[in-house]
Length: 455
Image 1 (cartoon, one colour):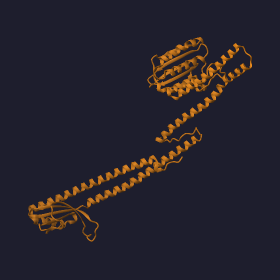
Image 2 (cartoon, rainbow, N blue to C red; image 1 turned 135 degrees about the horizontal axis):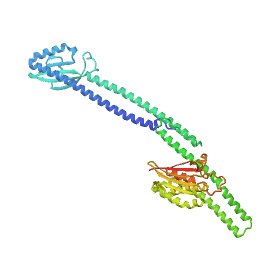
Image 3 (cartoon, one colour; image 1 turned 90 degrees about the horizontal axis):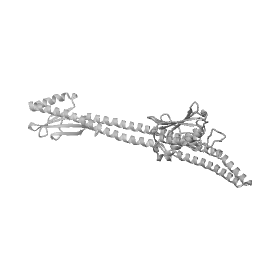
Image 4 (cartoon, rainbow, N blue to C red; image 1 turned 90 degrees about the vertical axis):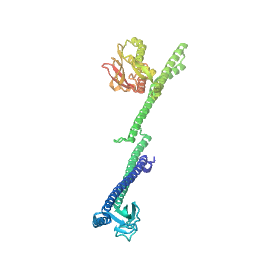
């Protein structure tokens, strides 16, 4: 199986998408920060220029042009301590004070790009300059300007920082995407190799599950459970095939032998009738075995779940006990009931009836005379418990799980009627109803406990 390239993996595509979204967000934040910083600094600069212009206007209003000139000259003498530049011109454009005289008077704000002093021969390195023009009395114009270098420097610093961050985000995002995609591909490759091993015939092999338990590990764990179930079913099928060959071979061989003997021997009509009756009985036994197997397959398919409804398990137990009481009495055994009569359970009434019947019939069939069989039914906040116990000879603990296998019978001589499917049907019905089935020693005898979770 050819693995996809890293660029075609879902993790890489998601990483690329998230990176793209993050870059757009990063770019939007950068533009917003740049604009807010520029706007704030520009507002502060204009405020300081406006304050200076108003201060100089106050000087002019109180002392006239001479006072204004003196104030400007005094400030320009301290030029190294201020970034303000000034100009006072008359209506003819003549510069009366300061050094700003290249502007056409027009009240308000102006921004210009100009070449700083010492760089007049070059067409680069222009700086932004903010100018406030204010009209005074007697057609005098006051001009106050301030270098906008601080705003440009702050803007450039923000741009450089965000460009560096942009590159870093791309580098880290791409690197992270490649790393995650590589890890994803390595995990997929391990799963692929394990799958190929299973396809090649190693049904015991399982998909790898790491300790981190990410989504792929959870999926692999579920697939392993499915493989366990499939493996169990395959083993069950193989076991069933062997059991069918073993358990049906004897009655079919007997049937064939008796029929051949009937053909080769001169018999009376009554003897023929007896042979035919025996053959029919053997065929009925074989058909009953196949019918039981088909029923188990139907139960294990889970199709009966669709017909689940609330049933009274206590009523079922009482009805089955009443039906089998005469059989128990005939074999000199007693059945004792200890049940809660009204216990509701979501399930299939017919299957639950067969479950109770098989458990009780099994207890009657495989216990000695004078055995006391007890059926108890109780309900708690979490589960409903059905127990069938007897004080017979019991079963060795080594066989507790084997008795639920198909065709398994403790009596190797198989002289007792039955096909070894009764408890297997019980196990299938319990599993269909999400019940747990356990066997334990009743000291003496056997105790079979069924627990159904409350819905």
